[in-house]
Amino acid sequence: MSEAYTHHWDEIEYFELAIPHAEKDEKVAGAKKECNGCHAPISYVVGDVPPPRPEKNSRANESVSCEVCHSITGFEGDIPFNFNYIMEPGKTKFSSRKGDIASPAHEIVVTDLHRSGDFCGICHNEKSSFGMWVKSTHLEWKEGPYAKEGVQCQDCHMPKTEFRTAAMGTLYKDARLHLFHGGHDPGKVKGTIELRINPDLKEAEPESTVIFTVALYNQKTGHKFPTGSVEDRLVWLNVEAVDADGKKYHLPVDKKGFEGEDFTISSNVLAYQDMGIAKDIPDFEGVKRDAIPVGNRIFRKPYFDPQGRMTIQQWNTSSFGVDYRIGPRETKIENFTFNLPYDVAPGKMKITASLYYHKLIPSIAEFLNVPKEESEKLLVNQHVTELMIFD
Ligand code: HEC
Ligand code: HEC
Ligand code: HEC
Ligand code: HEC
Image 1 (cartoon, rainbow, N blue to C red):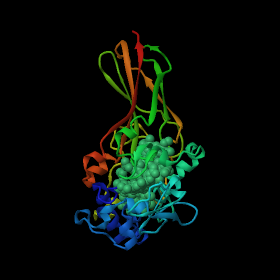
Image 2 (image 1 turned 90 degrees about the horizontal axis):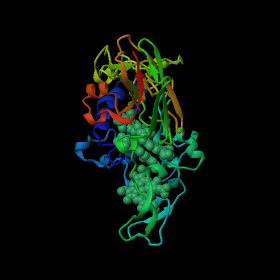
Image 3 (image 1 turned 120 degrees about the vertical axis):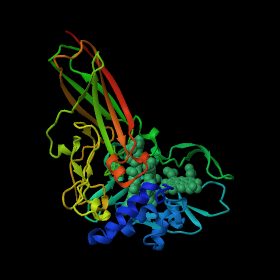
């Protein structure tokens, strides 16, 4: 969060898509100012619109700083969203506890809010100008099992350990580490989903049919997976078989037949045409919607622009497609029907199920020249099974 304004992809999206788009389309004009309510709150509060580019090293570069979070005293209304914080900047800092040793630098006032996931919702829930919940991490958590059990965002993202929070302060047994690991920390993402693949038969002959079942269990997140910038994320399941001769077969997922399913199975169609508005490309044909092997299951929730085309511009989102993400502690089942070819090699066949994650859809990263690490392919989990093929 300390790079929420300066991080290169944030800079590209704000200066190259959001601002030019806001200047051309009345309906999304607010984006120019409002992105900074969450990404550069100090600049937003004092009214820099737009703030200077990160290279100018203005106060916007402070991003979401200590000052921001520890000046928040509450939020307006009943639901935390769209930077509805109430701030009291000054010498008094607001936090979850006050030690025995007074700080020489500032006063501390204790709030209940800092101990609650509602605090995070102030920026981790976002409603577009079309009234769509384009970010809903806090709402997903609130509806899920963890909030009901009293597990807060802080318990997973600010773990407790023995630590002195100030050089001369108290040594706490349970001080909060400000890790805030998320999509940008591979260790946090790896293993989020537990994966198992099993065939319905242990042995088969050429030209027979085998059905592989993959179970995907969300064992780690307190919200859905993926969450947050869902419009950018690509989480997909790849199943591949290799026969005894080393010949590879890519297995497409079986269709389930629910409404909007096409958006959850990878294809070669183009999308994201609304980037053409900001980029001044009339009749922009778009870029590849998925940019991964065709026929794979994608766990996503598509965002649509007012023309009904898929978009990654959350501020331009006026409707959603089916929400096919994996909820907290939810298990999803996917089937793969494999009609074994007549010439499949006898012997052991190895079948691998892999779940991959891209923070940003690779075709978009390429189009906008976003640094490679934002679209790299990360393995979330993998499982291998075997099938004996007889002559
Ligand atoms: C994104 C918001 C956020 C930012 C940024 C942030 N904090 Fe915190 N901080 C919190 C929250 C929330 C808590 C309370 C967590 C709890 O007790 O559940 C906290 C707790 C603390 C505590 C008390 C820890 C304890 O266990 O008693 C100290 C001290 C502190 N923060 C200092 C800082 C400093 C210094 C910075 C900047 C380097 C900083 N914080 C940045 C949100 C933030
Ligand atoms: C003042 C607004 C604000 C508050 C309050 C806030 N966040 Fe954030 N948070 C952000 C922004 C903005 C980003 C995106 C940073 C970026 O784009 O580089 C972010 C990113 C994150 C990430 C993702 C890091 C990654 O690897 O991509 C995590 C995890 C996170 N916040 C957790 C929390 C938790 C937990 C709380 C509550 C204790 C919280 N945040 C409170 C604004 C906020
Ligand atoms: C039970 C533990 C748990 C709880 C509770 C939890 N999270 Fe997470 N969170 C995770 C894990 C694990 C990941 C990494 C996988 C992923 O990216 O979703 C994650 C990822 C994130 C991300 C990054 C998403 C992305 O794709 O960049 C954000 C932001 C975030 N959490 C915010 C929150 C907020 C805000 C809350 C409370 C409203 C919260 N989390 C509650 C475990 C938790
Ligand atoms: C209500 C608060 C809020 C507003 C308003 C907001 N953002 Fe964010 N933004 C966040 C949070 C929180 C995250 C982190 C989500 C995650 O980690 O998945 C984020 C993440 C991002 C990311 C990084 C995605 C990634 O891959 O990690 C970009 C780029 C971004 N925002 C750009 C913008 C732009 C441009 C605007 C204005 C049109 C905007 N944001 C408005 C809260 C906000």
